[in-house]
Amino acid sequence: MSSDAHKPPAKDGIAIEGLCKRFGSVRALDDVSFRVPLGSVFGLLGPNGAGKTTLFSIVADFVRPDSGRAKILDIDVRDARSLLGRFSILPQDAEFERNVPVWDQLYYFRRLAGTAPDEARADVERTLGLVGLAEHRRRSIQALSHGMKKRLGIAQAFLGDPDVILLDEPTAGLDPQSVRQIRDLIGQLKSRATVVVSSHNLDEIQELCDHVAILDRGALLAAGPVEELTRSGRELDLELSRALSAEERRELEDVGGVTGVRDRGDARLSLTLDLGNGRDQDAVVAEILRLLMSRDVVPRSLAEGRSLEAEFLRRVSSGAPASEDVPPAA
Amino acid sequence: MSLASRQVGLVAEYTGRFALRSGTGLVFVLASLVTGLLLAQLILGPVEFTQEGIEGADEGEAVEVILETARPVVSWIVGRASGDESVGERWTAYLLDDRPALLSGILLLTMFAWPFLVALGAGNPFSGDVGSRRIRYLLLRVPRTRLFFGRLAGTLAFVLATLVVIVAIVTLYLGFNIGIYGWGELLGWAAWGVLAMTLMTLPYVALFGWISSAVDTPVGSFTLCLAVVGGVPLVALLGGNAWEPLSWARYLSPWGVQHQLMHYDVLHVVGAAAACLGYTAAFVFLGHRHFSRRDL
Image (cartoon, rainbow over all chains, first blue to last red; front, side):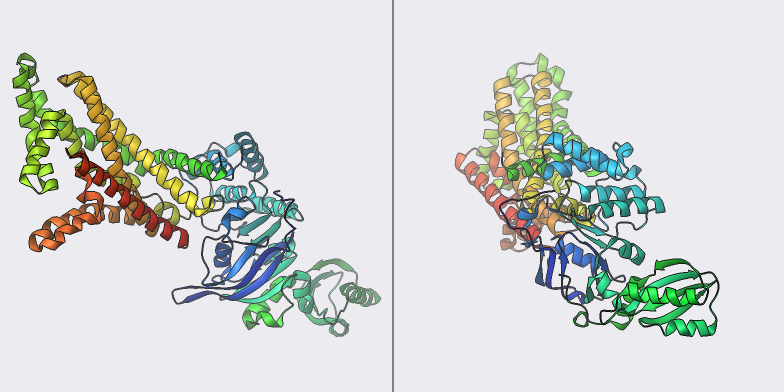
């Protein structure tokens, strides 16, 4: 991890301030502002064409905004020299040199960052091991599968332990084993680096991220801690010892904080909770369990449901503007 | 060494390395070698044909054969470049009588073809990487300015290394096989030829760097580079015949001055060298300005 003892610590991992970008007649980003807290794992959500990749490209200074600005660690991204080695990105659709072995490309990248040859070699070996490509180090790019190329992209993003890492769809097209491996790697970065992940996989974002922003058609719909964003629509999945009667179900709907009960069949329910006005989730869950136990219904499993997915779909379909949401993540 | 110079050096080094592994780099090397040696064969063929006669003849007869071979080529090229008959005659005499005539002819012919070959070798320093977004992996690690100059330096080194190989092969062949020039005279003129062609290569590499920074497909970039190299003299020649001011179009590229680098008058040589450096500075400025501002 790079550090600079002479400078005060940065306030934000990333700060986006009023970014606008058009490509011809297409408005890719429209006055987008939010902050990514230092040390957080931040999810960037949005349907296709929402502007996620454009936002990443501007933050990485590949693409210049029409107006607004982006900062990484309080440094304007246009000041590339100050940021060299301190942030990295897995671009969504960038290719590697076709006829050059994996190891040579990573070594070149590491050397470009100013690392001494021995240190660069050690870094490359370690990073290739981290993503499971150590045995393929001498292969050229065209001999790698799609999943291996993706892991190589992640390896280059992790090279040199940058302070801020942007990952554009890091698990897209990977097999389940590789997806698990990549998620674990991202999980290990928590508290060591600020990580921004864009993904269509909302379960993945919910598992990995503590903060999210939702974009749609270039506009920011919401930004903030996952906990805050999903308070009004927290999902709870229950599996019970038997199916509930209609009266038992009505009693469940009457519990304070429960706003919806959805029957998923085979004695499985999804409850929607509203935790607004400071209502405590644990208290609501305890009340639900007490009610069930009093009716001789034994909960066999209790799990957090797809709260983020529900919230995402609600926001995107309604197009709720950012101003109605919690303040930008602080 | 500072980080900036290390980065520029690394980018230049790997540009050359990766170019050799890529198809276009190899195509350039092969095309240059084949073209260079074919052009040399145009001059050397008739001489070799009469090689036995030369060896058996006295020195005066041998020189006559050589001059007969090289004179039409040299006088045609310098005649076009000077535009003045008396200057052309004196220039031809300088190249054929004062310098090794065969090498002069080969160098002048190579100068004619070289910009087209350089378009192959230097027509894609950026476009392929921008189109495939490969360049993004580098932009994370190198500021745009260093990447731009590193790529240009690497491309230039790659092109010049190929040029040196061609001239070296031709010179050694002339020295060992034809054997009528002294080694000092031959090597000195070959070195001057390489220097002149280096000066002439600089603006073309810079021009192609500018074009490549603006066009995102390698094919588009190569095509535009070749169109500029061939189009400028063509417009000047054909257009100039129809309407005289159009002949000035030859100065839109280094084509208008490049042959003056082999002139007998040192003032012409210095002027041509300065012009080449001026073109280089202008094209580098335009290319860098575009590359550092555009979306990548």
